[in-house]
Length: 612
Image (cartoon, rainbow, N blue to C red; front, side, top):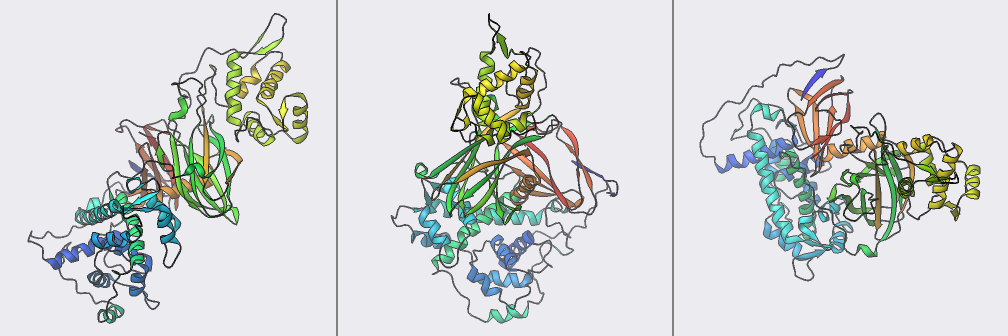
């Protein structure tokens, strides 16, 4: 991967080599040196230099987490009072001397108080209530992140013994990773956010900078212990685990962790709504799809899934587009449609189904389906033999062929978005917009109802067949217009669906009946692109491009695809050249192994998606 400059930018191809720290002799480290090294490693995970100051509670909280501590809000408030403006590295070291890491025994003891059956498990309902309803609380998203971890959850219960073991292992891995990061050479350090190279040795055993006056005053005061505070211990442990796991993923080599999608316990008692839709491949390679508006009446646990729609009627022979990846991005509407905030996306997977489980508050949400496009591409080899759509009998009467009727039946299945076996005017208009670019008004729909089979003012499957037969009759048997319709819906000359992927969305809510309605059909909107970028920036692995500190490539990988987002922090546009000729066992959404993308100044863009 290389960068070429834009018209107004000029990057040097020379790689600057920062000065390296002087080598030190390998003597056994003292306890004081080990302590200081661990402090510095944690600090440099959050800051570019140990000369930088902590200027907020959030930064203090994050630095303490990376140091293996388990800070509650009470602990944070103890060291960050209303009078605090900043803390330096030595303040941080003093705090770490006073706040000892939580032991596994202490953590188990705290969780055990919620184990009403003394069997090593806590019901999700009890865990939710305890962590979110009283006193210092976790956010819904933080609790969702814990109960979505397959390794420690099953059948609506939380296995806190496994959790504690995983928590301690994660702590150890975090510490190991931060120390490794501290020791790598200058070139590797430039690939991480902490790319500031200090002139001092990596092992300066005796920091002597003056602590802030506030911390000096605190050193003489009695520290508060959280050992008896069950709530603080559980809150900080679960919150710390979530952040530690994210940290391990970020610092690891290629491990954006994904868990297997599992249905919530007692989902059969939840209320469900379903809507269908479709991805359509345009001539220019863009992908168009339905977009949805969802309403949740009251705060409730919600389970959302999206998967390709299987139209095959032959057992053991599924539809070929089931291999197309699908995803659903859920955005909360705040005051207006223009102000949408990413809430989550369906990152968990079970075969062809992608889903998400968590709690959503009341309000309006927008659902944006997405696919990488890796397995939804223009046909390379055109079909030469054209299927027959209509024929005439001995009397000269025109009929639809059996093959065409079967195809029309599949199209009806796709455009019947609510799955009630009938086409409403709104559903039919999505079909009309796709195939003709026009909408059917109320008057035209009234004529349609008078001439074709309808039920409850909606068009039946037979009525839809007859409507297409009428179109063929209007052309005296010429199938030209019928082929325009078929090509628009993704079919080739052999009546194979090759340039579209129908899908189905299922929404389950525990405490209310969700509502969903298709409202648009368009290509990847700016809102969807922003949502994809935000999800990758928050969950992906960031790497600073070698020699260009303002160009960061964020990569999010799951077990089936990889998405990369380029973040250009500079004031100039850049052109990035990508060479994937060495990639194995994967396909990308651009169809080329070598290509270039242009990134505007101060912007982000999805540059590359690939399936493995």
